[in-house]
Image 1 (cartoon, rainbow over the protein chains, first blue to last red):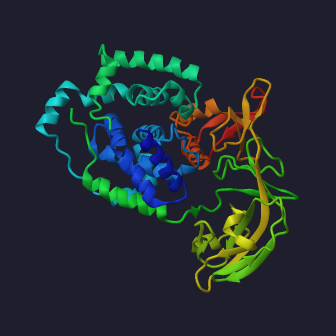
Image 2: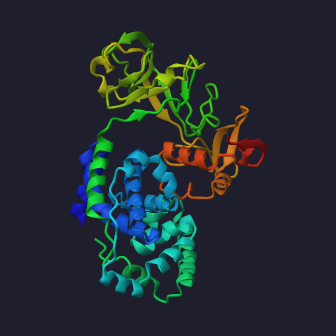
Length: 196
Length: 258
């Protein structure tokens, strides 16, 4: 884990100086997590691919003020992917030429995935997440789903630690109500698959 | 369960596009930043849209970056790629402030990869004297004061360059403990400095703006000033917000974004 962090910090340093290959490596590191998160919100493979791509393009555009947490840009990417998912058209218009040149495959779920979807309904989770405010969704993403501490998440969202705790409590209650599920954390984690 | 995966073909194609995108030189969008030329030069980065960009004389608003020339300006008209000689650097210089103006269409390149793109459209119209669009480059990008500007053969351009020193000021706080000033790289203060379309300067409340925007401005990962202002400019279009004095309570007008 430490080695990964050190590598990423070095990559980010190189990326900041305009090294495209370093950005490529950062994409390799985080594309899985960012895509799964986008998919969780959009429940559409092609849209999730676009939201993920936009997040990485924004990482470059916004590089001078990206907040790094424990040597990683992943929290920033997740927050940005959330915004991209909620404002997909705006992001697409900014990067239209680049995105339109990319190939979207037709995605078919396997029988196994279909069966699993009956157990953990992506659409149910997406529907519940969609009812949260932007801030609450970011909080749930970072703290409940991705496991960042409240103190790590707070500065990214521009909140105090105390306010973050309060909001998180409210968001958790709201989400539990939307989902009607008693063991929310388990539910969310089960929808993530391999967290690598 | 089997987690959803990005398709390999999309991932491969996007990775290539991302690497190319990052490797391409930075392009300066003209007219995004406005300067005021006075006895001192004050750079005031406010909302970067035409209506909201504020020029406030030599007033330096809290949170802004002030760039002050510390040598006389070197200016001249050049053709094609040339080296501009600034001479020895003063001790207090920590950068070089450069303004490039095209006389013919083409791309002008500065050390560090910044490119000023001049389309034919930029060179026509009534705005004969464009804003002082500038770039501050580090001293190390012009060793011994030799500033190399790349340009196409037979392309004509004018340069204005001087050694400079840059310093950032912090946001100020009013009697209620609210921060006020310009949007900086750390995000927006509680009271954001703006200039109205009719020229009135004042502050709008960040929470008012967020309500108007109705989305994620305050919650987004603190994007760059550029990103934040883009988002504000997009979303706040047409909305009317109370314009306050820096005390945050005295309303002095309305801020309307075109």
